[in-house]
Image 1 (tube, helix red, strand yellow):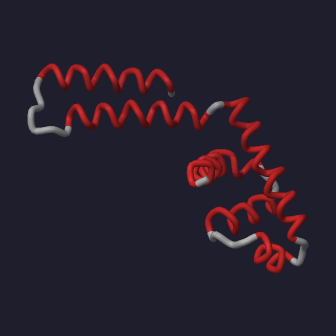
Image 2: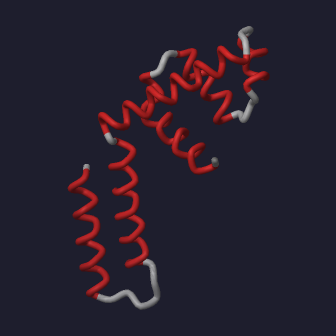
Length: 113
């Protein structure tokens, strides 16, 4: 559950501005403020079912954007390369080989951008 929560939050960070203002607001209340559907319904003067429907439509839209654009996937690959380079350079036994390897890894990251 937490993994999906983090994934949806990441999708919202990338594609949130493409959603309607109402979808953005409700997603923020649910995912960032951790409000329940009932609490959000009270806050927005709507029903719990309406809030649920808006959340599901917004989540589906975010997942569709990711399928088409793949920005989160590219970001995660790039972050992985940067983490790998950091580990190569952030140890007590740093040497010429680890520096060259880190440069190679960072080149791969740049190619994704």
